[in-house]
Length: 572
Image 1 (cartoon, rainbow, N blue to C red):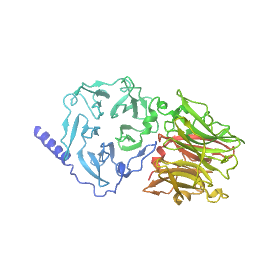
Image 2 (cartoon, helix red, strand yellow):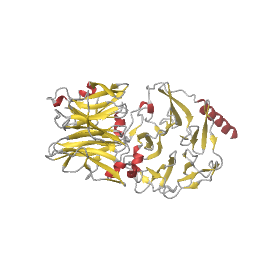
Image 3 (cartoon, rainbow, N blue to C red):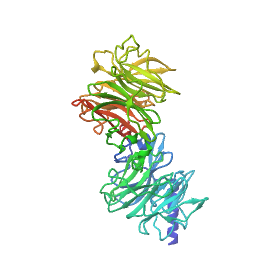
Image 4 (cartoon, rainbow, N blue to C red):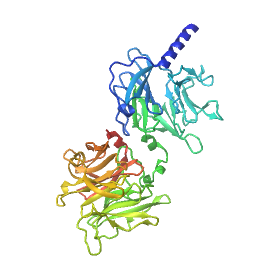
């Protein structure tokens, strides 16, 4: 018997050390991050269908900290053998190989040097992974059944134990000495089949799966957030976007903190992934993390919600575009009374509350129209459109652009923009980090349906020329207008009316790939309706898309907001 165990140990060592099992002969070309897969939004999707998630039982996915190696376990439906599979990014292409037999539920430590295998582990060496080693008698015990052990950056271990009524334990490091494992409290250890914990590298939250009477199905994923006193908060079911009537388990967050991976299904399990924003949306008092949330009782995910109802969005008024300073403590937006003036209003965050919106000091004249405010990424200039006279004796021939600058005493007085903007019809300008200015304009003032989006190129503080953006953006339809340019110019969102759209006007997005704009994409039915969606803005923290929805029948509009996760789902 000892001889057989020795032979098995030697064989296992060879397999893990060399990682030399042959790859499958038919293998699709995979390039780019995340095995070349299109990132999901806030609705989970199968990860790499037909490649990683197959007819076999595929579980326990994780990346190395540099995101250049992707591991998961697979049970072959024919042989019923488990194996540990790896994809490695080499020369921008992912290459597949089989490491060896599965041991435990593998997961890698935050330092990338240790792969934990339940009560066992492997170390990274110059030639690959070491032989399988024991964690020692503190963990490698006959009376404990550890399936998954997860480690934090501080070296804290959190692990399950199926031999002790399905519980989760924790072991910390104190003065570089490993502490005896302790049972976690009832906040975690309640329910059946409690297992497969994942502790965040910074120990700010813990994710695990368990079957409870108030759950959605066989086993659901739960999360607990670390409290200020170091205790663990109440278990929170991760909701019906994650949990179904099937078996959800094995939660894991990628090292770049962008995506949440988990398993769905038991006998025919697949690997799913979703935007990790879903975790922040579950965090208690998450509204304290965003000043904008103080305007709304609920933070949106992938379904738009009314923004600032009763404060910004008022039923009897038409709400225009909105803009924020970088700290999100001051905002400006356009508002029009029915059959009345169109002015710019402002509100400030004071003592944790947003003030009642009032007309901005430069927009109190109800005889003129002020539109579309925008604060540039630096926060030192606010652009807006206006029909105000250029001076006491000269009327403005058209809607033109003005700006105010911020100084030590606050915002200054309005200044009309000079060449190459002078005399040009301009409706809404938004600025990039480099000062380039994107705006709506038209060559023929008498043909508003031919509006398009233009850019003024900034060179050393001067706008040297204006150019119309390519047909990928300007040929979608008519009334193409109200652009929002991301600060890094990686994408542009705008509205346009198209025969292929959902309603009177829809929101579209185009991405900048190596200086070329991609063909514009409709933002889809979650955003666009039979009404008119327009005037997009992204919050300075990049978390929320805010836009207007206009009803031509009533002449009124509402502001909506939604998670920007939808942007990544459309990114080429």
